[in-house]
Length: 374
Image 1 (cartoon, rainbow, N blue to C red):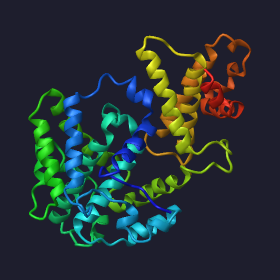
Image 2: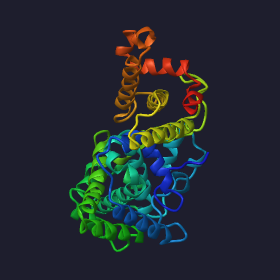
Image 3: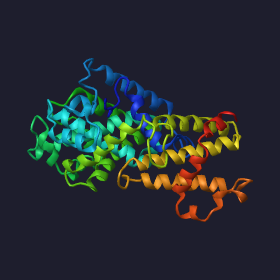
């Protein structure tokens, strides 16, 4: 099975953006955000991403690459135990390859577990994710060399203290210096340093973008440091995250969402519903009530299903987000004209709103057809 932990490069920009857009939700990123970056900033981000992708036709400069490309055997691993074994046994061509692989996993796990931290930049997630990954990778290399954990094959990085790289990201100036400190720094990191430096010297929106990048990289490392002392401690979490991806394109065979559409399809459906609602709101109307209800139901079910992918408590804020989406659906249903006779009024749902989502979803498996007929 082909694994897809991918950073922004040719063909990969949309993948990271889709991961974030799914986790956060388009209404949260489109309606609840106070504003967007300027067109000038967005254009600059696109130009830099294109230069970055074109810098090395052989793909060496594209960072970080697939886990399956850099870690032997991972393409065929599907269980957390198999993925963990591959990660623990991995040896890399260079220290930088190892660092960018770690950075890719660390950042994408953070995007998934703490989507609200990325909300203000969700419209350009691929670019910011790539830059944050570069900052983290450079900080890992810099720390490893200082701590004599810089074996070329990257095997020693598993013993690197999680709090040490974060100190390299204390502020934007320090982070940018880390990107360019070593003579063997790959070209992509030099380009990222130049781009972030240009943003820092730009207008208010551009400066905010540069500061966000350094801040989210530091915040991501801090979140991991809260759950593990060294990089190697995070392998089980990253392995479990990767294992959940095998479930995205299959109908569940059991559980409360048995035979429901695959998560990837439901995510796309939620995006379409949210886009339709956004169109109505931009036009000054609320849109059909059945469409609003369909969005709330599918958004809540998506968040609930995503949280259920983990065998234990889901990481970060996923359980909280699922609970919030469930309560929004329940509150909506209770305010509708026919709610007085509906089972949404049952007291048991107050304490278990996610159970109500599962109940409503089972009752309304044809909600897609209802929404499309509005």
